[in-house]
Length: 169
Image 1 (cartoon, rainbow, N blue to C red):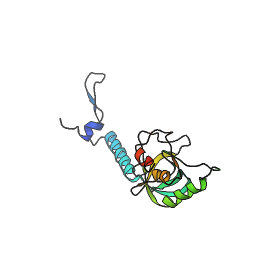
Image 2: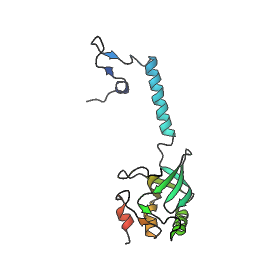
Image 3: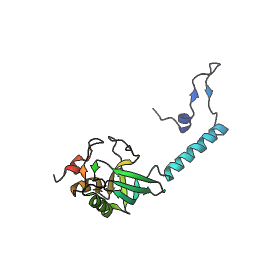
Image 4: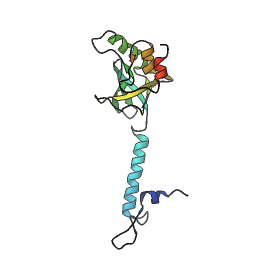
């Protein structure tokens, strides 16, 4: 069965009208309604292609602590990001400064890739993105655990990279 044309997909026929006969929503590409909708569709596609919604490459602006960073996309959007499946010491706890310093050494000012895990929520209760952080081929979340700066933390659910977090243990 052939796929419907773009016009048929976006501008279907109404099944019935008051008189019982089908009525087209827009007769042809020359109709003002058709043109307005197509302009909006093209604008949306351009914005998606150029905007913040398609890129997964970020630059680390600053390291907040051992498991939280601020990152910026090429479009200028900045977000706080909580590294998924790890827990680093909080302020006042032993190892707090060391965990933050290690994360700074690893990724501060560098280009990273953020990965979503569909098995986890998108945000935590503070509005931070929950993501895996990749620097080249290295999973930074697991690197912090391997180096002893953080612990594997399953509060948000099991990780699809559990083997990486549990390596060398």
